[in-house]
Amino acid sequence: MDIGLAVGGAFLSSALNVLFDRLAPKGDLLKMFQKHTNDFRILKKLRMTLLGLQAVLSDAENKQASNQSVSQWLDELRDAVDSAENLTEEINYEALRLKVEGQHQNLAEVSDLNLCLSDDFFLNIKEKLEDTIETLKDLKEQIGLLGLKEHFGSIKQEARTPSTSLVDDSDIFGRQTDIEELIDRLLSEDANGKKLTVVSIVGIGGVGKTTLSKVVYNDEKVKDHFDLKAWFCVSEAYDAFRITKGLLQEIGSFDLKVDDNLNQLQVKLKESLKGKKFLIVLDDVWNDNYNEWDDLRNLFVQGDIGSKIIVTTRKESVALMMAN
Image: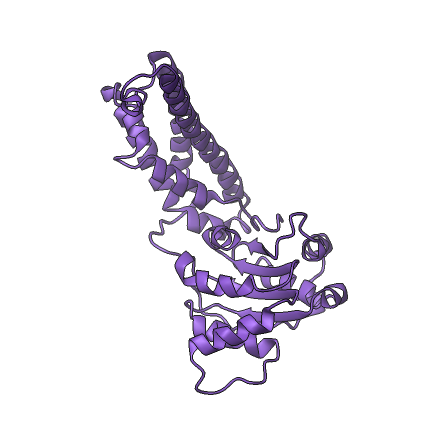
């Protein structure tokens, strides 16, 4: 398990989103192919093939733990998506090189001129793209054999009982390496003196994200290292009031009033965290709307250097958002 990256998989969905942005109908990538009008279809074919694979990605990630064939399929898909991403990056780099070269030669309308790739470069990149598309099409043809189902839209959140920080020792057998790795992350001091570090644990349901967090949360070395600790199960749709109040209750704020509004609660949380080295666990986070989390994040940076937040989630996009 790769703590801080993913449990059971890399950031496939995020890589796909990057590719879709680059392959947008009016994006620069298509403009770079403008001289080769008959080959626009190769980018369209790449985009459509990726869309078909993205539709079953959620189902594949849910089945990989119990189906070795699906797990292998995901590994092969990851390699193919990496290849596609590298090729689009190669095209972007070539365009930048041409643009800089044009500027050095004082050419007019540099940006328009250099959105056209040279014939030699285009033929080379086209061949690589076609090979990658064939690999992706082969993977797409295996969808039916693997029994993968299409799933469009956002990940459906399953109802679950809110977690607590209490841990059952019988649940941690065989996890010692993961436990030690996470504890090391929590106890380490950032070389750049960052006040706050977010450690994300990402994976499908049932792989032990919450259990792992519970174990390190209750570790004696971890307890001694931090001035304050708080555990909160987010689970539901993002609710700033509920999260702020829950964290205040966890850290032992005794001046909470029934009629406190969100602003009053956030001022109290800010004062409670200010200058303290804290550990906060946000368990089962689903919401990946950056703007909704931003205000809360601004409260967390009030802590002392070495403060940490553990985030457990099934969504790679949440981990990326919280880390930025």
